[in-house]
Image 1 (cartoon, helix red, strand yellow):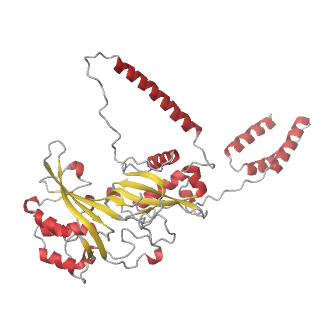
Image 2 (cartoon, helix red, strand yellow):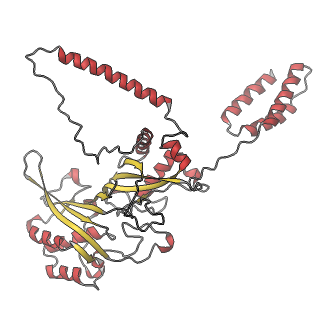
Image 3 (tube, rainbow, N blue to C red):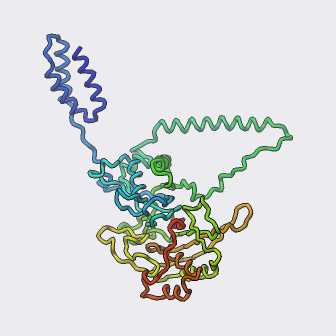
Length: 437
């Protein structure tokens, strides 16, 4: 009876213990220490058990460091987020909630890595196209990350190294069969209606949906499933979409690898949108995404638009940037050694438009406005300083000549510009443009 209990305990421990060889060796010594019995069966079981234990080799622990594999595949994706509760994009350590850290942590959790591996394994890190500031939002932020080839084929790419789980295939087949049956029933119900009844037709047309919203170009079923699981791990104020293999990039001339897509070095331009309202009261539903300016009575719109138009072209934006270091620029991907390197303050603005938003049903103005800034790259807080300065001009707090002097002077710095930056909740990175993504 005691031997039977030992056998059951052995199989239970071996079932839950991954390092089964250690368990076997330990139990072999336990078997030796069992009381000797005259039962030949017991003696034979102990001998067979010791023989089996000596043949088992200790399993090799796989190297799960994703960076150790020199062959990697670069992936790219779009990200939308509400930046209200984050301290900007840039990773500032595990204790400060940032967008880069949150998205990277969710990605590594999806790959099977967690905090327990932080000391022994290097995480897969995402890089963003723009380092948005604290409280700033995004709809079309672009990210890229490198995945070891074996890990990519295991989770993201079809091929000889992996297959879609049969459970998923069965689920899809069952869903298709159920929809086919439902379609047949729907058609039979429609056909049995009398001729006097008005013919029924769906009012929803999904063929004209914008590709930027539900783009599946280059996405495999594994990628869609991975993207879905990734979003399930992320908090509900962050969404990843358009996950695919990174395309070839002609614009990236700064990378050490020619043609390698880079989220911050490959874009041809960016679209920032600043939203505000001049209504006599604020809209509670828009409080996290639209700035309420309570000086509608003396806001001069022609002055506001004229001031914004002066930014179009290439200018020295030293007076409209809080910092002029590479670590604070919205498109720099630098190492810690040159993180504080000074950058060129000249930036090119392609266009600036002020749009008055209208009600979809009545067509009347709603009192909400947006400033659309299309530019190549931006400096730290450059957009918010531009809007904030022009608001000062439009409300008479700054003379137009003083503003023009700040923009045209080569020696002006941020301390010369007394205008405060516009609040962050109104700013959103709407899109990052690439030639092939």
